[in-house]
Length: 410
Image 1: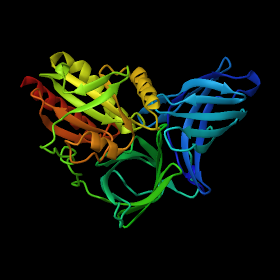
Image 2 (image 1 turned 60 degrees about the vertical axis):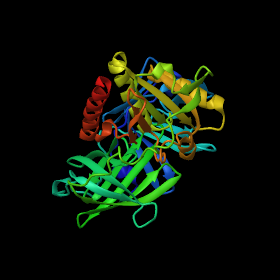
Image 3 (image 1 turned 120 degrees about the horizontal axis):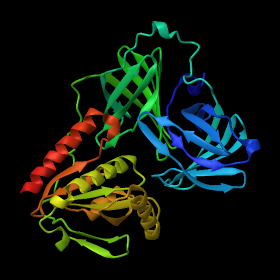
Image 4 (image 1 turned 180 degrees about the vertical axis):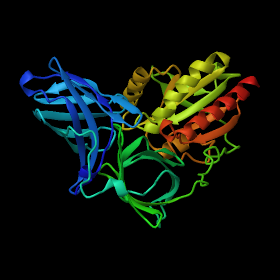
């Protein structure tokens, strides 16, 4: 049985587009699918309504809601853009009960597309006919010590955080460089299924629970697949994200980049004298970066009058400065970013590390440098664990505000 027949995935996608009345899809619950390979499908739920020749999708990925932007009609193909990432869904309404097309992620090299289809499915939950849920005894509601790519030189740690309600499962994985977004899925007996599709990432996690160990597979789109292993451990923690990147004291904090008006901006300068400044090293293609950017926008509005400044330095997909600028301008417009935005260059951590040679390395987008009023680096924060991490995110926001308040007082 394919994964799609085992699995419930809630996702939210909203768009409106006029089509001919004779080719309107039916309102109701639909099941969307990305075909990752010949035997693996990543499913997601769509709730579709049609009103006055307009199609409207409302899909939910856990607590996350995503509205797609009505982009264009290319012949009989409808094209809708994701609001925060440079990717589109292209599809044809082949019947009142069927959509067929593909997802195009323009942030990937070459022409990166994955086949997409959707069909009418009136059931809110998919059922696995081979599983008797009344006898299900597996409980995954723990903190899980996780290793991705176990047994290799590329192995990296994570924490699995899961919530279970019957056979419904949600949660995320925290890593030392960020989280794996809002994951939703199902548990059937000892079989585990979670996924996320947000316009930048297409994640699918599968696993089997044996002897208190989850042995799983992780698929990221069509370009990456690995294994993972996890055991329950409520005391396990990752390395403190403020301790992963260190300052090279011999190199001063200084840089020069163009802003979105094509003007060269150098740091330090008089605008930032006696100001607490956060320098955010990020990319608009990165969901963790976007979570952090939304949070920093809130911080800026709250503390700017007290002396907080933020400088965003964007490293973007592509190979042309004009393309980088356009991507950051789109981000600025859609996210209503009120602080300085600079063009760092290509989305390359080695390039960022060279630009910020006062640090020992850049191991993650995002990385944030906190600078006190005297112009000294007070800490460097690697990665970002966002809203999907629940209490971790809440604790980070509380600690960050306390930290900023102390810096602003000095």
